[in-house]
Amino acid sequence: MWWKPGRFDLARCASCGLIATWPRPTPAALDVYYQGVYDTAEARDGLRSFYEGRLGRLLNYYRLVTIEKVRPLTSDDHVVDVGCSYGHFLQSVHAARQVRTTGIDTDASSLASACQPATYHHGTLQAVHHDVAPATVLTFLECLEHDPDPVGTLKVAHTVLAPDGLIAIELPMWDGWLRMLFGRFWHPLFIPQHLNHFSRASLEATVRAAGFEPVHHQAMLFPSELTLSARGALLHLLFGEARRPRPAVEKLLAPLLILLFWTVDLPVQFLLRLVGRSGHQTLIARRI
Image (cartoon, rainbow, N blue to C red; front, side, top):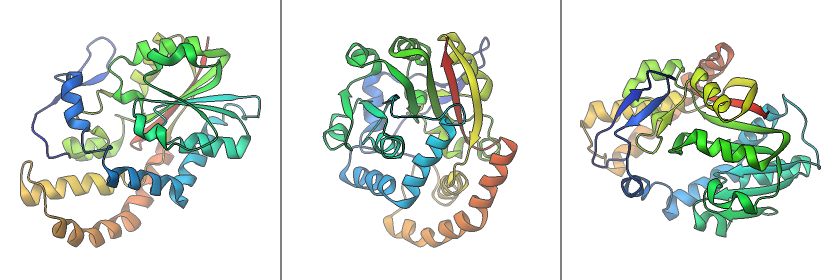
């Protein structure tokens, strides 16, 4: 995916069943793999363009509606988003429900131009949790799979939440049928940035280990899962191992991938969501 050196495998814990990237990259090694992925001007412009566009706004509303399957949010709520990036989800939920919002992220440059209104903290949840006011809802959207110690992080989240507070975790689902089809080319693997690969069962075991009780768990629509996975497999077939195609090749393939998205990917996603086997999941759990 990244055309960077290094080989990684996956290991399954014989005790709890969690799948982990192996060998586990050191923090310095991870910096190399993150470099140029999210921190370029092109990447930042792409993120902002997506989340400020119609599809991005629809995605964040979808996330809000999913959380509200447990209970509606009101202006009395305080929503804290860990790994908030530019804060677009916080902006969306504030506009819809007038909740108080706080964001936490390790990328200082994203926070420097993050959406308002919200309070932002630079660092990890473990580092800044003493400065965060008690939350009623704490979200990890595409975040916990990057965490080297997910149970430890969730235990800190437990201390931040008010009594009966909720956590909402959105991340890839190992149980997805397209993962079984595409194998190493399954796009949500994101190796080695994703350190943990959760099935439905291992995610529920993780939140229970941190003192939470699952109250809602569902598969999520993930349009582009099939298209991006097929792209990775196709590039490997055409060019072999770790050979990055020229921009002209990407431009030539673009119409084919767009056609694949609208004619196959999108209807397949609705089917996979219906049977609970799409490539993403959201788990909502209550502090106990």
